[in-house]
Length: 477
Image (tube, rainbow, N blue to C red; front, side, top):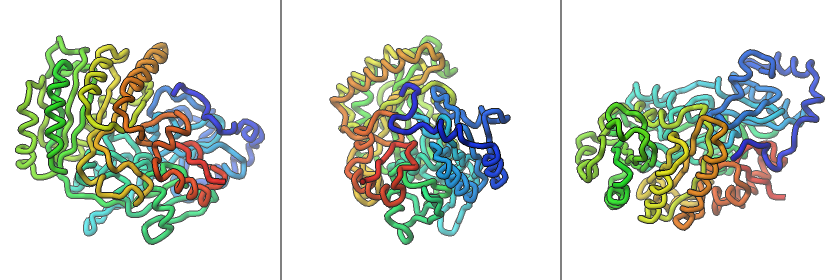
């Protein structure tokens, strides 16, 4: 994903050139939120997203204060034929949250959160991040399925599926979605649920941002409170032995335990020997969301096997679990990712990743293997909602990160080479939230067996493909 114009999407330069200041002033006066133009204070900060490789310059940024602003912005963009990006948390690695020349509909000011303690449900506005949601829920001993990084926005993660720290016990974020309020491409405001507009509700649970702008979400949440969580860190030369044991261990682990593996370069942690700093290591991360004493018993065999350099597993509030991986993913670093589901945690795959991480060009890069099998994800049918990938156990994501633009080519090359090397272990399916701007074939793999149904739904709700800055589903003709 070298920074580029989105393929197959028309430029809005002619329309932008034709925009007259009186029409812009009329738009500004109709908003409760803010309208930013390139010369305005705050414009540069508002156009920045998580991935520092993205450097785009929209003509207008509408910072919405509520649903009315979203509707107004959609109608204005349609009237003036502007390419339109929608920003929630701005975490998309491909930078879909911002565009050149057109309009960004920015939801990040919409921070409302309503908690219903009697029903264990919440209503969340689209500007919230998962860290913000779970920080508030912690006060009541509750937790939402969320994501792995606290700064990830609620909309993008949920609409694409939503892996997180509770995935084996409670499933994906979209599995726990009860309703969504949506502004459609023609400016209508709809509620989507199992009872209202159920076809749209089906598509929103895994169909990404293709069908409208989700302005708020209703979720189930769960008693969590404290969780037994943290990392086990090991030298890279122990990877095969430890991960063989880990593979057997997780095959019978209870659903309360969500785990994964990360290959990385050792940061200068004070609890690691100085000679380890800057060397390749690997980590097993674990979150046990259940009775803490039971969790200690469940995790004991894993913690006692081998000789970890550090055992950082301890009881912590679930809101702390939500932020525990944040330091591995600094905002503003240059990012290039590749990802797919795996057929299993094969010994040869472990050897391949270990070999590549030993010559990784950037110490910020992390290769992650998520385990989501034998749990709640598999209790949902492939056709019950748009997210189709229900039968596997593992997903890999190569999160290459660096800071010097001069290092871009070698980091992208390394990522692609590792990607090619692990293809023999690939399930030839992808998680839509982790992929870049890699073409229609991979998009179809991300939506899997539901792609054709999603294309029909796109035709109904967005026949002109107004919402196309996403992992795009083209409407059927």
